[in-house]
Image (cartoon, rainbow, N blue to C red; front, side):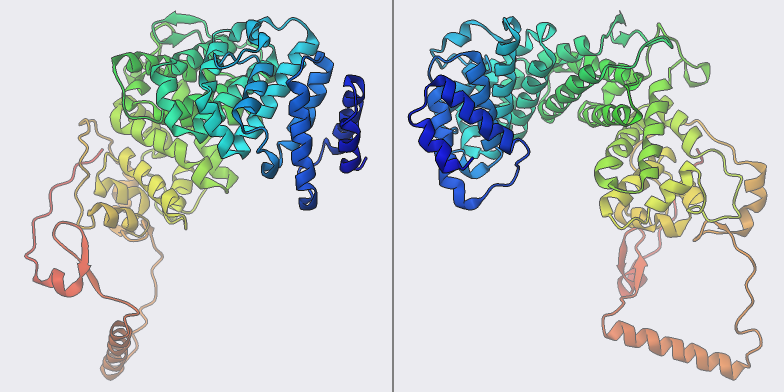
Length: 540
């Protein structure tokens, strides 16, 4: 039906006719996501009419139909002016049973946890969906949400998470995620005054069926444990996303430290869970990795310190199951071959910092990723091992990806240049060494334990023949000047020198050298610098 015709009929329609007209509009536009610009004014008027109806006392079925219409309209950010007002947002908050304390709506007497009927539940769900769309598409609505204290209503409803119907919980959590993502200024209030981190942690604990067997240890899900149901997984993902926003701050106190260790323990539990599909399990692990990156690195010991479950004697009795899940997740993301920046760098950063600060984590990961070298006939970047894949990433076109991969391997080598070159070759590592000022050798700033790896017999015997640039033994190459006369050699040398001079004078290339401190500089500067003694390097 024509929108102009619908509006003209709505002007004189009773509740029953209004519901019928809007139901028809909803059926025709349920899959509409792009709108005709010419009808923008008409859609604004329809928004106003719908809000007027919602402002009256109408039955839940009529409320649901009106909210469905508003949800469709809220996909168009150009028609949200009537909704993005104090009155409009309070009407939606009232329908969603969000007790902001700013309204006189009778619905506020009946919060989400006490929705009486299925019809009322659908009204709450549709109102929450509308709020999500409006908040996402309208900066004005975001400001009004702050003004009417929507955050307070959301946190009040988090306290009733155990009584939530699935969609009510899902869209409450999504709305909190959107508010905390779009309004960074609200995060501090949510953290300090409304205790949202604690509330969301409790939501996760309940949703994931955490059974505590120690201060920061959840019971391990046994082989008989069923996969996490899809609905619980969906709610957990929204809670994790909201927690990610709220833990971005670096301002922390003693109470936060306890809360962060609790979160780390819950995330360990999540890493050990399976969902109904491999794709959803990977998504859950991705959100867990993102949130773990926000926690203080000192909290990561919770991942491996599980006294009740026990661990491996080789790693001081620590349990490495969660670390192995992270390694497997990293390799899965590498094998995907795309979206490395968002999909791979978070887990690489997490494993890097965990290895830097926790000796057992570093030792375990190194044993998996950089086992003692045996194959030195192939280049380090060629092959199917995890080391080969990571070395290939050291020359990736994306600067962030290659730096993160290189830093990860460097930390596994205890930031020793000699050890890194053994596994990667100088050519692959040059970018990292130049950035760190380590082209002359040496090691990074972090102090590591004195545990050592011994080289394999294969590596020791092959070491004198390894090309340090490529990191492997090269086949003997014929000498191209072997059969030249001295005059020919002199001619070729002069020709090559002239080519370099031409390239240099045209600024196509610039000869560089390495200063004693390991940084790059123009060649003429490095020739003037006095040489310094290279510090002795130690092996892992």
